[in-house]
Length: 201
Image (tube, rainbow, N blue to C red; front, side, top):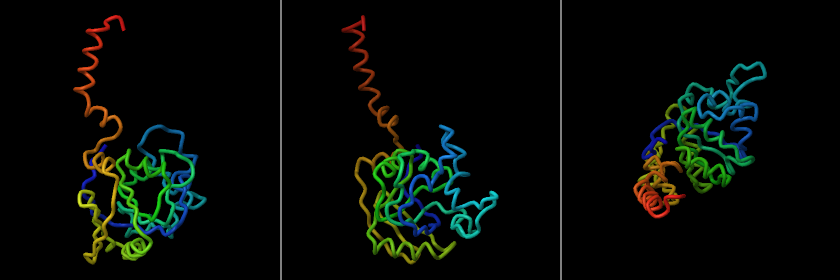
């Protein structure tokens, strides 16, 4: 998993409440267990017209936001089913940070396990960030996980808090397997003693 320390990028505004995981990645795109190639299904029902052409009114199709790496979203982002394909699709599209007033618990935890930082802010702070995000290609935010701050294009700063264990994992690029491998020496020592004391196991 890639480390997340500091991210500076264009923020796309998505002021929609209750964006569920089926909106993020519709069920038609869940036939794979690969984490790549899912960007084509990201927000497909909003991003694409019925004939498969791009909907020019959808925010990520607009020229200013095509390379957005941050999403400023409405309340209760990631609700619905627990599909891990949702953060996979966001990551495959280049979204490394989602900012909202609240997240569904399973989606929130899945983000950390896949290298995405979900940042929870107050309603007033989200309104300010949404205003920043509406500046088009000038909507550049800097999200600093080490300092736990978001800096807007005007230099204003918002502070946020992240669970310190989750913060440690993202800063060091540790998924569940990576966390286990941090204990590799202890595991090998235990296995060696087990083999010595109980060779029949």
